[in-house]
Length: 306
Ligand SMILES: NC(=O)C1=CN([C@@H]2O[C@H](COP(=O)(O)OP(=O)(O)OC[C@H]3O[C@@H](n4cnc5c(N)ncnc54)[C@H](O)[C@@H]3O)[C@@H](O)[C@H]2O)C=CC1
Ligand SMILES: O=C1O[C@H](COP(=O)(O)O)[C@@H](O)[C@H](O)[C@H]1O
Image (spheres, helix red, strand yellow):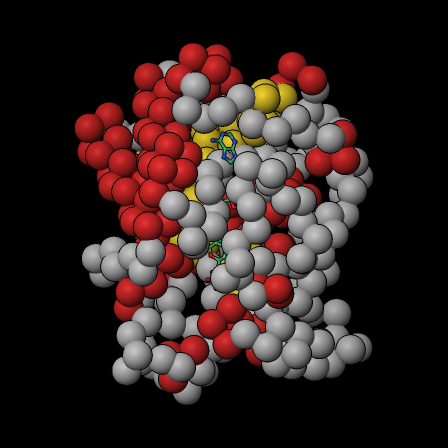
């Protein structure tokens, strides 16, 4: 794969999990509409590779895209209660701007941060809460139609469609990762749904690493750890990308404590290759993740689910 890799939304929760895990492994261009403090930027990324820009600004995105080999596109409004004007602008229009710039400049691979909320409508009253429990066999595998449960989910389904279009029309490899619930160090506490779709930091970094390394055409995969509780299949991520997650929410109590304190297998936030001297500060654990003044805190988000 050609480098550099453009990472949009680099200052956010997912962006920082990726950079802490694989920040030393690639040549990066980091884009975010908020200036990134030094603590959020790997040592080897120069000032010239940091772009403060809004993804709806086509000229600015085009400039950042010049010479890029792959894109991980995370920037957007992550709130499940986000209003239409925000998801229309940040998630749909912004994604089109980034994808268009990518095909225009000949980018090879594009990983798009989709969401569990693109299929939230499958969690019907009849299926829940059994769906969230390990003994339940129901699985979504990425071949089902989108079924959003909110406008944020609609915007993520739209992003997946934009990816399909740009793959079919322009040949760009596109993988849409329906991310579950990213938290650091332990699964979301006392939250069955969150524990069923937990994505640990190291599995997140590993998964997006595979999105950069694997060969694929167009894929929709689920981005969760190897949780016993789950209703998303990770088989397609394994097959198409070579995803091999290390963590499982079953290794923690419902309250989020490691079941075996002596077991080093829990998510330390480090990558399989060990934490590096990438220069990144350890981000605070939720709910102290940096907040975006442009997106007020989602009142529906459980404290530990963010
Ligand atoms: N954190 C999670 O568990 C999940 C996240 N996702 C998706 O992953 C992506 C990243 O999510 P988080 O890191 O949690 O969100 P976040 O809010 O922590 O980070 C988003 C970053 O994107 C930047 N940004 C937002 N709109 C922008 C714009 N118009 N132009 C440029 N930069 C912009 C923000 O400044 C922020 O640094 C989002 O697309 C979200 O929908 C999907 C499922 C779960
Ligand atoms: O897409 C997202 O999903 C996660 C999990 O959803 P939740 O409804 O269980 O909280 C959410 O935490 C994240 O903010 C959002 O972007």
